[in-house]
Image 1 (tube, rainbow, N blue to C red):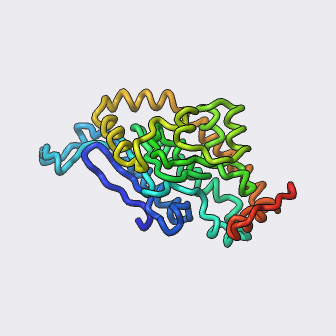
Image 2: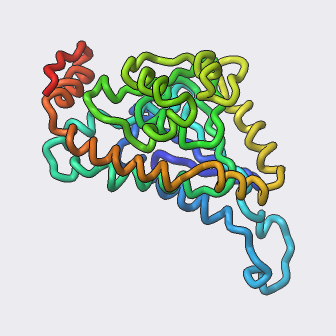
Image 3: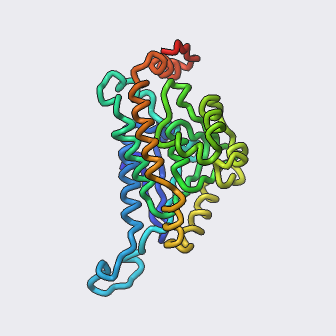
Length: 278
């Protein structure tokens, strides 16, 4: 994969987003690679039954490390993920496929993440914005660097929410506060996010990777069966995906709006948008 790396150390699987030239923004290639990485992670969480064991009777741990027991998702040292690649998006806006991009690419990506049955920890350095924030909220735990920040970004580009954030955010802060955060669309600091319950932990310093990995390793050495069952009960993936479908419909209605086109062009030209409500 070009923009995603996957490494395995015993029961911990690490998925790293690596597209620094685009500030880890989600171009089409990255979306598809993340979906593939999440799907493969879920497959590696399957506990082998006796019938699936090595027919040669080999119990060598190097031959079979066993199932994945926790997953760590991280971005770069300076940015987690800035959401949709707006440069790519602008070139695609006139294409019919742009109308259904949320349904065909974004939602399958987060559905694959939601299908991972073991704990998923996000390490967040720098900005998590738009679909990047949605991606972080789809993880079970979030460890943020002190320099981390969170921003909805959807109203700023004249679009609706995506990737299930309309479900996930109210679950954490309540509907009224969720609307305020989405409508105000101001950056949320790591400390404020901790106070709101949006992150699990704020790491010392500007690098969350070590603290997030330590947290994930503790989970990877815990009672995995218990974690799997509790996660399945507590996290209603079906409800989140149903809301994500509604978001996809809203995106289709807005993607060709005058306000959205104005917002994208203003962003790329580094000026304030002039919204007309159309």
